[in-house]
Amino acid sequence: MIRQIIHKEILENLLSFRFILSLVLIILLFAASGFVFAGKYRQQSSDYWEKTNENLASLSGQSRQLHRLAFYTQSVWRKPKPLILCCDGFEKSLPNRFTFDVFGSDLPEVEGRGNFTLSHFSSIDWVFIISMILSFLALVFTYDSVSGEKEDGTLRQMLANTIPRYEVLLGKYLGVMLTIGIPLFIGLLVSLIIVVSSNVVVISGLDWLKILTIVLLSCLYLSIFILLGMFVSGRTTHAANSMVTLLLIWVVAVVLIPSFGRIISEVSGRAPNPADLERRLGEISAEMWSNADKLFGKRAGSMSTDLSHPMNNPPARGRLKTAEVNAKNQARDDHHNKMLAQAFTGRNLTCVSPTVIYQRASEAVAGTGISHCMNLRQQIKEYQASLKDYIRTKDAEDPNSLHLIFPDAGCAQAWRTISHNPVDFATVPKFQERDRALGQSLQLAIWDIGLLVLFNLVFFAAAFVSFLRYDVR
Image 1 (tube, helix red, strand yellow):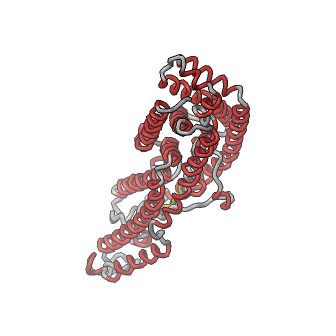
Image 2 (cartoon, one colour; image 1 turned 90 degrees about the vertical axis):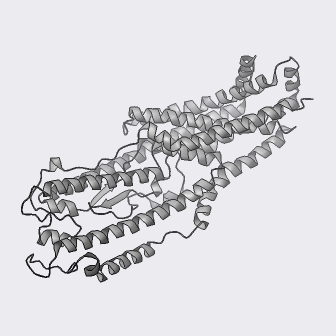
Image 3 (cartoon, one colour; image 1 turned 120 degrees about the vertical axis):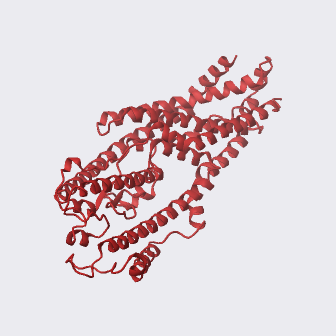
């Protein structure tokens, strides 16, 4: 009997005018998403490889002397992700340039040739279309699933045949899920065909698995709104009342609550000020140098280009400069962490909205958004450590070096604290961004996935209880 109910629901939906409009709208939006992504990705990839090759060419020139490798400021650009097609994660407004040497790094920066005013507009990615448009269509197809049939008198006739109510509810749910799935999967297919045929991006096997995961998350998300629509329809006697109630809930859950995230972040605490960071960095330098001899050894603050000068104390100088740079690195990390904490505060407090949860889970799986920037910065720190170990190993092979690896380019040049010998550039570690494995992405998204499942269970139970008590007369 469930099969007959599913067939009836699908047939009625497919023959309705609302389905035709929904199908056309979704296909057009997904097609636009594919075309926009292809053009944007082509530009981003061109910029990325141009900047990356410039960095490698400059790094190659520093290999003529080992100490120059240590003090060369590299620029690493965030690699454009193919899965931006699925979930942009507001990457256009996030830092995309990271500068560093082996001793420390600056705060990430936002640079590029794009129009900065466009960062205030949402991208037409899959998650946007599904979270905004398809969630509303899910309510359009369910607002009259119970109350509408009661008004038409078909619900009473259906239940007069001793059909268990749970079968009716399950059949209606599956019927709408399959109906919504038709424009969803046709739209996804159109978008993928446009992107693949453009030859601007190669989608790897890992990317295909992540795309499949995002599609499953999308089904889980849409299921919430289908069950919500059935629940509200089962609590009202007129379809018009159901539609008005659902529209209000949709505006609050999908539009207002996610928008409150920025407001909550701003009022939760004072934003980290770059001027405060610069003042703190100046205080660190003043404190270190004013107590240099006391803290790090006699004549730690003295430096003459003549290494044999009695005022020079290379080990003490090394301790001073290392402590100063480490303290400044910690201050920058603290500043960066405060910025992240403020952003996460707003998101965590708006997770009562399934839309926010769905967006967070999709970003984690796609490897975009804030988590992408955090992962990239961590990879850069790991690369700094490996490059520093390489310099230390090569420096140990030079008998003319003082073997003091500390952040002072003047001392490295004048005292030869780091070897001046050339190195084979082929052996020099190069930075290469790594994508998270699917298991790691799912681990980041596990709590959000659990919340989506919980929302489904709660609304299914609510719809079931509501339908059991529904008066069909």
